[in-house]
Image (cartoon, rainbow, N blue to C red):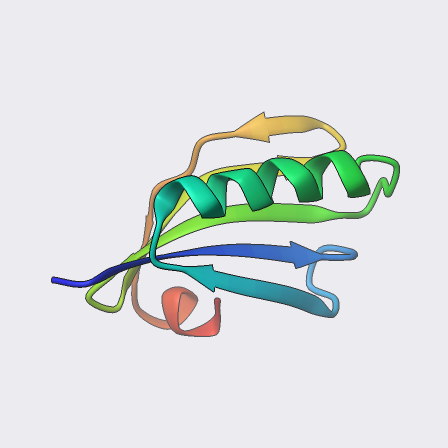
Amino acid sequence: MERTYLVRLEFRAGGPAVEGEWSVPGTAQDRYTEWVGRHSGNQGAVIQLIEDSGGRRRVDRTWTARGETVGAWLAGEEARLR
């Protein structure tokens, strides 16, 4: 099963987003770290590191101005929208 790794930046929760996709997890992790550093001054930003495995998505990490959390698998409609 092919795995891809996404990094998603919403400039505000539910707002416009930028997303990148990589096949190498380390590259995606580096981009996530870079985006957190670059956008940490934006109080509304939401940055996620997401693993996609056969159409199922797992949010590995989410950063907001409140801190970083570890996520879980997304299912159904929620996965399709991300």
